[in-house]
Image 1 (cartoon, chains in turn purple, orange, green):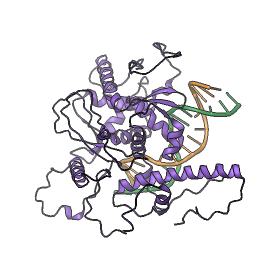
Image 2: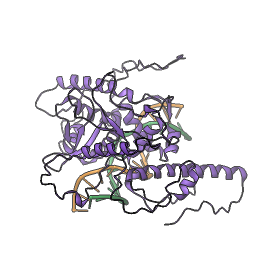
Image 3: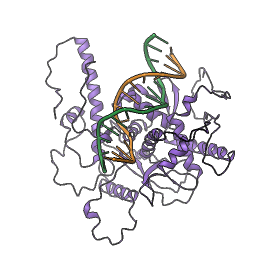
Image 4: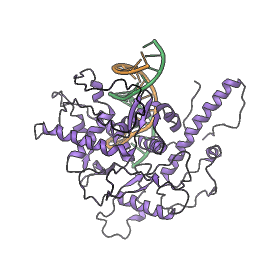
Length: 409
DNA sequence: CCGTCCCGCCAAAAA
DNA sequence: TTTTTGGCGGGACGG
């Protein structure tokens, strides 16, 4: 209960973003052998409160990456579940807007769907008794109005929006408008829409951390918008090269082989032409500041440089650089602007987190990387505290420790 | 000032 | 009841 503090010095909001959290989440579970995901372990492992795990999990579930198994327990499906989920969503979307008066924003969604149909994953070794099988819940749950506003539902709606239209970019307000136009209630036109928009930000963050989406700006204005990077209909977006996050796992730093690390959201098609490079995006806004120098000579800064391009290129170089290196962190920021770093100790190996945690403090040139590390450090700390605590309980010792003082600012 | 969006209170579902 | 899930929005952060 004592518990307190936590206010770290170099705190940055980005370190706690849902997007990063999602990346880490994926990083620790996207591996062979993973079958179930426990909310508790996940939370402590990632060093965040339970509440946040629910956010991630709900969204991932709506995308087909996870499936609820039981209380506190989810089944891991992985990226391979995405294609199917998307397909289903698309069908639903098509079906929905066909029974809809035209010339009108998609209002209502006489919903009574409930997926669950995707029940053919090879699981269930020896089904003891799969209790309730949802059986069509035809009942119009007027009671479950709550579900309507769930993050998961919103996510699906949001995605449907892209899957069904021909454009691949939607502005923030348009999206929120659509999503808000909820069932029933043709009355208010006066909603405090702003409120829900926050959810959109959450969703967009995790989706972009998975590279299904990208935050952009509407060409004309500076209005924020989202561009769908997924693989919906259009077979000819060969130019659609996105970066896929290759999160690192807690205990797998020397990424030895395992080309399997290259998870690709793209699917099922054995020979999918779409090629995606992958690096470690980590923080969605991997925007390497446009150094003032950037502009210089270029006479035509017409377009030609989209963030995406930059990112891709960055990854390219990064890959080349670390080609045969043992560490496979993603796109390091082109170590150019880096003035002379602390050059503390380069040879340090991150095998023992204890030392690492203790030494940790130098700001890494790569924002994202730094954030990630900090996250782990944080997780380790909580774990350590817990361990210590238990020890205390058991030993009942007075403990004048000096070793673990939290370094003051 | 304003766009983002983290944090966590606290109320619905589940045990 | 207690515990698990998660709406929801205040207000902190960062530009």
